[in-house]
Length: 165
Image 1 (cartoon, rainbow, N blue to C red):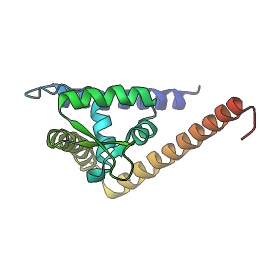
Image 2 (image 1 turned 135 degrees about the horizontal axis):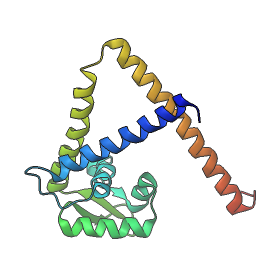
Image 3 (image 1 turned 30 degrees about the vertical axis):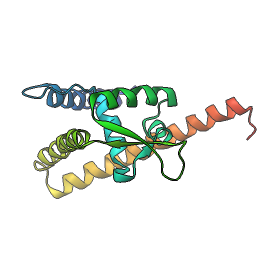
């Protein structure tokens, strides 16, 4: 790895780590006494995507990229903590839909505020050109990562199916 690539890699890892640490400090620091893990906060974020209609266990699993049994266990914990509720779907009584409770909506709003505040405070130090360069660069990184993920998933599916679909 050349010097530029090594420095960029170190910077990306460091930024990722600092964002995670800031998120943890915001959630667990100060007067906040939240009984949720960062993973549970992100699950609330997924559930909030479907707003009032609720979302299925399979939707959560796909969005979070975790197994159905893992989602079921996590959702049951969130129900016990009072952040989500489970209801049978009106159109299909076999399907369980998960919705945020009032407490869950409140916690999710605070989590969203953390992300919005972080971006707002960081970008106010940038001029318009710097903002555009940053956005374009991160967008290209995101597209690259998405292509790599899709290629790996496609390869994994080919191996599982023996190249047959």
